[in-house]
Amino acid sequence: ATKMALRAGLRSKRGLTGVAVMRMQSPPVNSLNLELLTDICIALEKLEMDKSCRGLIITSNQPKVFSAGLDILEMYGKSPEHCGEFWKAVQEMWLKFYGSNLVTIAAINGSSPAGGCLMAMTCDYRIMADNPRYSIGLNETQLGIVAPFWFKDTLMNTVGHRTTEMALELGLLYSPAEALKIGMVDQLVPEDQVLTTATEAMTKWLAIPDHARQITKSMIRKPTIDKLMSNREDDVKNFVKFISKDSIQKSLGVYLEMLKKRKA
Ligand SMILES: CC/C=C\CC/C=C/CC(=O)SCCNC(=O)CCNC(=O)[C@H](O)C(C)(C)COP(=O)(O)OP(=O)(O)OC[C@H]1O[C@@H](n2cnc3c(N)ncnc32)[C@H](O)[C@@H]1OP(=O)(O)O
Image 1 (tube, rainbow, N blue to C red):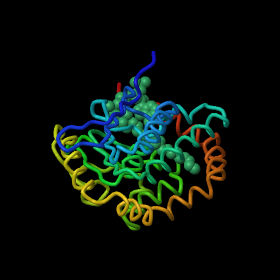
Image 2: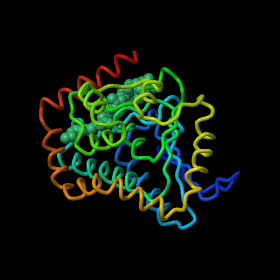
Image 3: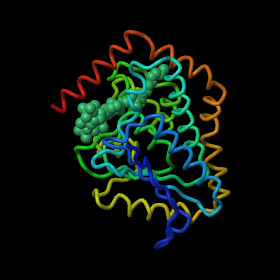
């Protein structure tokens, strides 16, 4: 059955003029598969071209989860061609979000491991639900895989060098309180206030003239974006080579089994 992957629309309610809210809606856990990534990119592209849109809040319509990260089933037991296509879509999502001209705010209303954390970190500001059962971080090494350089760069730009060493090598998942402490998220609020707080924060960001904010954002992020832009094809090749290895496929299989057992 086809499902709405996300809803994006401009609303104009209580100071929210020109702000789109994108709600990821890919049950059960918003894992980022090719379809969802493509939908997200198309929606962002449209908003980016819409002169009446100045800001975007991204959140989840799934209970307890913002996004479970990349869909492991897109990388497990798939052909090299498929893995390559998938990886291009992951790159595209990152490039579009990290380089967005819009004010982007992540309203993180649930757990956000790996690619989910990456997506949140591409935003200008992060608000997370203050629920100790939720976690966020780049846990790739725990799956036996290696986060590529642009995941690392995004983390480093967010939390600094030393914290990145610890976070990435150990594949740490942080509670909301810990994530706030290291600067991975900017604000914690009760779960039912995540979206309203995001709109309040948006008002503050939109008080700055767009052109000044956009040029400043670009000045800060451009070197990181250029690094991937000039290495896109090599990065795809590298990913396909890495993910196709028997040992890596085996690690992913073991991890998927663990996810299923944990549930039982
Ligand atoms: C050179 C570069 C090379 C490689 C770089 C590759 C980079 C990868 C980055 C990634 O994003 S890898 C993905 C990492 N994600 C995770 O480790 C998250 C795993 N999921 C969870 O921890 C939990 O599911 C959750 C905390 C997000 C939610 O927990 P809960 O609400 O209890 O749900 P369930 O665990 O029962 O999950 C429901 C259902 O969904 C399946 N699933 C969960 N996450 C994924 C996923 N990322 N991909 C595919 N499938 C996923 C899970 O197995 C369950 O499936 P059932 O069939 O048992 O219903």
